Length: 236
Image 1 (cartoon, one colour):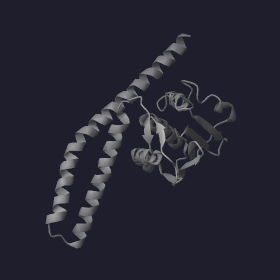
Image 2: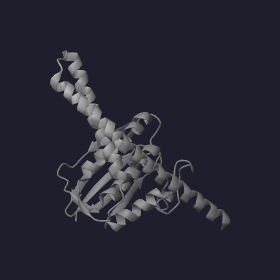
Image 3: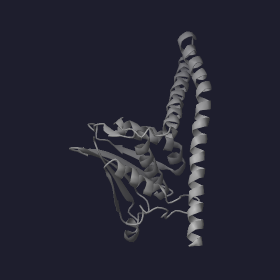
Image 4: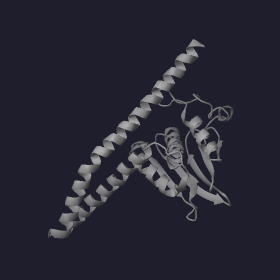
């Protein structure tokens, strides 16, 4: 019993560290926003007033484009860390996924993971608490990335809808999950990852969020054949 309490306390402290890192990231993003706006103003002014060679103009356009991408990334960090109002609003799931993929981009590139999008372009908006749904999807993306092989990793994100519900499926080509573990993965503090990588809280929290929204999470996996997590949510 003492050992269980010690493990629980360790997991809780690790979760608190992750929360603190999230807040620090949002704070840094806020500090970067002001100087970035200044740089973008200067670059756009140069584009309008300076006489440039064609090669220089191309480079300037590239600098403005990359600055815009940084601006979107900063906004995504700030929005993700902003406390939930606990109020459901209309939410575009594709916009949320695109923003989360920006957050994951450097991690995916470092691990050599390709992200494949298969969107249902007629997907309707849903009534949900946006930051909570983002938390669910981001956790599933991180889990998929951790499961992918060192070379040739692939994550496929598929969206679809039927009548009053939508579905988001995140599929990886990783190691898969053993059948006897599938029923355990949503239990609090259960994890197959080393302690340094996971708290075992992620899927349990995700399951609770999706249930609160009146939805469900489905899992399909075979050892060595990857895993597929599908989040099903009501439209309203």
